[in-house]
Image (cartoon, rainbow, N blue to C red; front, side, top):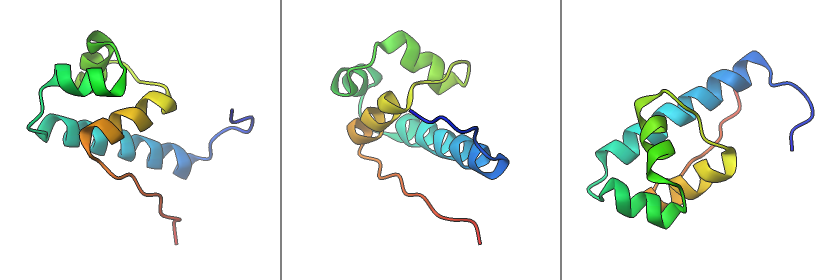
Length: 78
């Protein structure tokens, strides 16, 4: 669990990763139900996440990325 607040560039990075993950899941040829099942995420919160109206815990984001076949990488700002 993170105990220090995120710095502004960290928050932007997190938002970009979530946006990219949303796009990848939406572009996937797999059904939302199959991705939700494989990620062990209830379809309703997943749908809300994909609409951008609700976030998901980082553990769920990791499982979602894996289920959607997405590789998430972190890059340090220069």
